[in-house]
Length: 565
Image 1 (cartoon, rainbow, N blue to C red):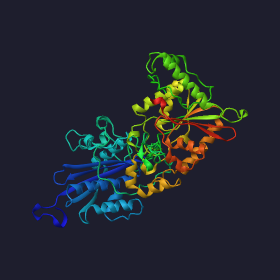
Image 2: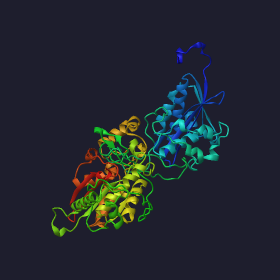
Image 3: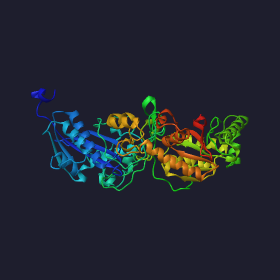
Image 4: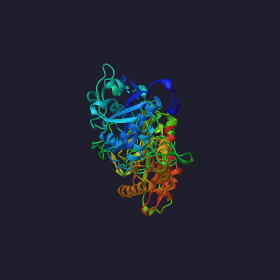
C-alpha cells in the first residue's frame, strides 16, 4: 500500500539517490539521457534507465533524464524520499526553486518532474561531472545505440562496471566520453560489448513535451519509413557546449506517402518516409566499394535513359550467361533477360509523343537508397538525425540495382544526396557502371526535427498536436524546427530545374530518398501535396521522369523493384 494507506508496520520509508544526465551531440542534435537509482544506505544500483531521444537540446535531454530517474525511483517505492544528484547547474537550481524557468520547453518538463513525488520528498544537489559518470555513461550508451538504429537495452549495458561501481571498472574519464562533454563516443571493449538489441526493455515513457527547437531542416515528405527509416545519432560525445553539427537523414516520411522513412505506420496504413544521412561527400568522389559478386534480378525492366551511354563491359556481359555468381538460369535465359532490360530501357528513354524537333528529354532515373538498420524499425530518419549507412541487406539491394542498370547501359551520369546511405548506394552502382558520383544537397531527405529516431507511434504519443498539424498541412513543420513538405517541395523543384539544365538530353541516375523522389513524381504529375501520402516507395526501388524542352514532364516508371526478386 502507498500514501495515506501505507502499512504503519512497514517501517521507515526508503531513501534513494537518483543520478541523471543527458547530452546532445550537436545541441541541438542526436541526444539521449541516462539515469540510475541507488540505495542511499548501501550505494547499490537498483535501477537504470536510458533512451535515445532523437534531435533535441542538451537541456531537454537532462530534464528527460531527471524525469526518467524519478519515475524509476517511484516504481521501486512510491513512499520513498529521493536525493537527486546532477552535474547540471541549470536543472538543479531551477528544480530547487532558486532560478526561474524561462524557456518554454523547460517549463512542462520541470512541472512533470515535480509531479512524480509529493512536494518535500525530493531534494536536489549539484555534483561535479566526474561524480556523475554512471548516468553520463548510460546517456552515451543510449546515443550510441540510437546511432546504430537500435534501442538501449539494460541487458547489454556496462555502465555500472565501466564507472567503477564494480571492481575493475574504468571511469568515464578514462574509457569514454561523458554525455555533454563533447569529447567523443565511448571506445574500447565496453562500447563493442553493447549491442542495444531492438525490442529491449525501455524506461518509462516520457511526458509529451515538445523538444527544444532545432535548426530548420527539411520536412519529411509523405511516405512512411516502411522500409527505409534511418533515425539515429552518429556515435560521438554529446555536449551542451559542443559545436558539432547535425547531419543525419530521416528515413521516415509522411504516412503512406513517406517512403524514405523507416516504415512508421502513417494515416491510411501508410508508412512514413524520409531519411537523412550524413555530411555531403565531395562531388565527383568515386566509391571504392565494388568488386563483390552481383546477383542479377529477374530481368524485368527498370528506369533507364537515352541509349547513348556506357554499355555493359565484356566481363559483365559474359557473366550474364555464364555460371558465374549473379547469373540467372542458363545462358539463353540470361541473355533474353538482358535483352528485355535493354528494350525496356529504350522505351523508358524514348521521346514519347512529343514533336521530333524537341530532341531527347532529360531523363531522371530516381533510385531510393538501400535499407539501413533503421528501415525495418520504421523510425524517422531524415537529414536532421543520425547518418546511418547501409545494412547488409541494403548493400545487397544496391548490388542488384547496379547489375540491372549495367545490363540496360543507358545511365550516363550519377548524382547523389549527401547522406551516407545514398552515397554508399550510388558508389556501388558507380563502381559497376564506371562512372563518377556527383553530390547534390538538394536531393537530401527532409529534416524531421525532434522526431528523428522515433517511431510514428512515439511521435504521436509525445507530440500529438504537432503530428496532426503536420499530417494536415504541407506548411506545418515537425516539432523542433524540422522542414515542412512545402519547403521540401520548393527545394526539390529548384534542384530539378538545375539538373534538367545541366543534363539536357541525357539520362541521369539520381540517388535520393523517399520524400524527394515522391516530390519529383508529384511535381511531374501536377498533383497536390496530399498525394505524397498515397504513394508507396520501397527501398532500392527505381522510378523515372522525363523532362522535355518545352517544359513538359512525363512519369515513365514508379517504384519498380523487379530487379530485387
